Image (cartoon, rainbow, N blue to C red; front, side, top):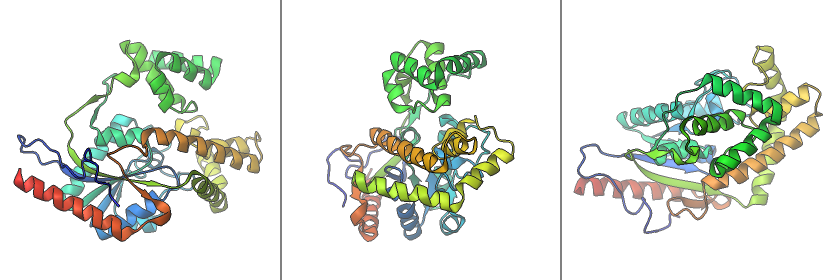
Length: 335
């Protein structure tokens, strides 16, 4: 059930009463990989006239379905989903591109009279919307990027990430060392501006009145669910999916193919690992990823209303959301 924390937007709707722009109600569902966000979001959207905006960076890419646990076509037919299958694997969607597209999708959903649900486990993508980040306007610097890429070849991506940690420990903590593209982007911004990447996220006027719901499970149960999900990915044909991507000419060095699951299966196909070893690597990396997600969505955050996914009542959550919407409408009418 929703907590009655005095700092919560749920209990104290906030907007600029001097403005004619009404803040858009936005339900946000967060939590670690494998906790059950997809199932919950579909059920809630079905019953509350909602549409889902994905805030999972892995779901942007076409032909990457099994390894990303992408909602199936049947689920997407039940409830409209946005920002899924919007790019090819060799196209990189930046945080700024996501933010712009997500804001447009939320506006369109509201205009149609439906309730938007922002759902995902990619922390910085969720925060960019909920906290209204004003992203640093630093244009790509091709020569610097090329130099950083060559440096990474010499000292390894981990070595480059270690250099980022020296310059900006906060950014390094939030960026996976395997994600070379984001490491390079952070260094590019730092070296271009002379300021830490983590210090350059300004804040725009908040356009949304949010109800943020978090799902949690005991860590050991979550790990078991993750292990089962990965094994089901293999059974569903993840190896064939990865082989198909390579057969279509996509380079194994693409940032998108460094994602958990794809990277390990590519190593298996190249003979580096047996399939069993690749699966164990997938499980290990996913556990590490889950621990990183916890840095974005803390159980102590007073603005996230946490639910135990082991004892989840969809009816109770729907009742809580309706209560929040009623308070939102009442407060706006009184403003």
